[in-house]
Image (cartoon, rainbow, N blue to C red; front, side, top):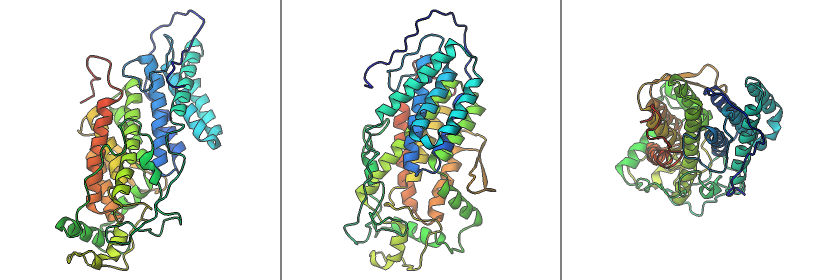
Amino acid sequence: MIGRRILLIVAVTLSFGSMVATADVVLDWNEIMVATTAGQAPQPEARFAAITQLAVFEAVNAITQHYQAYLGTIVAPEGTSAEAAAVAAAHGVLRHYFPGKAASLDAARLNSLAAIPDGMSKAMGIAVGEAAAAAMITLRAADGSGTPEFYMPTSSDPTQWQLTPSCPPAGGILLHWRNVTPFAIQSSNQFRSEPPPALTSKKYAFDYSEVRTVGDINSIERPRDRTDVARFYAVSSPVAVFNPTARQIITENDASLSESARTLALINMAISDALFSVFDTKYHYTFWRPETAIHAGDLDSNPRTDANPSFVPLITTPCFPSYPSAHASASYSAREVLERLFSSGRHSITLSNPALPGLIFKYRRLQEITDDIDDARVYGGIHFRFDQEAGARMGRRVGAYVYRYKLRSLQNKAFSLER
């Protein structure tokens, strides 16, 4: 039972010297986590990422005791190897959820542990990490993520979401995601967005015109670089974008193992909770996608919205309601956490995706990443600009909450990089 304390009893008395912990093993296994979870839909991918990074944090923090625990059930004897604990925690979670990748994960574990001197410290670290992995897996076993639910439209009225070509016969996907237990926030409706703009408003007409003009697959108004951005972020999830981003920022700031474990746990909690939140709002308002709206532009009672029955978006429309943008909500939540930890100043960030060889993006600020993500969804033809703006507001609120209330420093002053 998670509520009980997991005691690691070592019947031996040893004297341990001080251990210098680097961030490398935490960053290595974060990279392994991203590679292992790739290919999942962004929503379950984010959940797996949060579970993995929280297990790593809990294992490391049980040893370093720099921050408030997430579970508070893991106890580590003095002298335990934090590096070994981090490896065992990440491996334990990923091997449980991805048994088909056991061989590569086992090989990576062996390789990581080989760099750590054998002995009681290492053995205890492995035990701590395995305990943290088991505890997180147990905690999330009945979180509501395992039973898919679908949404079938009940009305064809203007504003109401309709099935798009990517939809399965069952209807809109991930309806149940609004009911999955969050990692940090109180409930998925805690940060529910205000209603979208009225169809008769100038805001709606302006944003409708933008996506109608630049989001069509055959648009001549869309610059080449915006086409590249749309394609890149169509295949690059928030987990796949902000974990590499965080690793690069952690490295340039020479963060410790403990700081790195906390940072990665916070951003992945924020990403996952933002996705729970956004699906609450999506299925609360069930607002139509541009693809549907532009086909029916002459039925929305707004004289400024010209219909285009032949409109086809540049990228495939996801099968769930439009408002707000899930990519925006998750991405801005991660950005909020990273800016609070490391400031909103200049960085050196390079992003790429093996699915699109040759496309490389270089950024100096986190805002530049989220600006591109916003453009990507509009120029990709799948979101209105107000979807992005609402997702950004929601994501920032989720990220601020996660940062403010979870994994707080136990020292008088938070670590020096933090803002």
